[in-house]
Image (cartoon, rainbow, N blue to C red; front, side):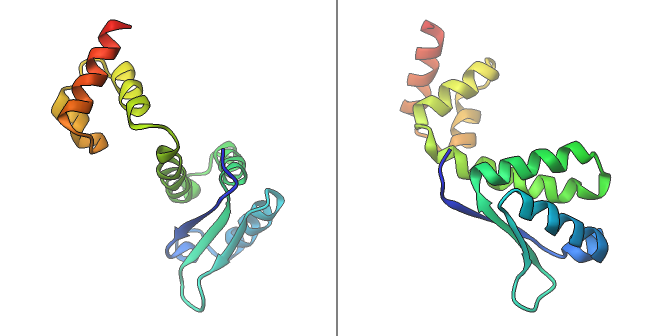
Length: 130
C-alpha cells in the first residue's frame, strides 16, 4: 500500500447520520489517523487519510454493522478501490478479472477496464494457457 493521502467526499453526512453519530465517527476516525471534517462552511464532509489508515477505519465501520453507515462504507470502498487500481498493471488486472469471471466476453472486459482489443485477447490467451 502507498502512503499517499486519499480524500473521500461524504456529501450531506449530518443529514444522513445525525450530529451525535458524526461526532462519534470523528472520534473513531482520529484513532486510526484519519480526519473527518466539514468542507469549509457547507453541509458536505470529507474523510482524509492514507490508504492503510482508511482501510483500517473502514474495517471498524464494517464491524459496527449499522445500516446508517452503509452510505459511508460504500463511499470509502469505492474511493479505495479506484485509488488502488492504478497500482497494478493492466495485464495483471485483466488476468485477475478473467480468473474471477471465466465466461466474461472480450467486449465486457474492454468496457470494464478500458483496455484495447489486443490487450484483452492477450490476457484471455495467457489465462487459457495457465
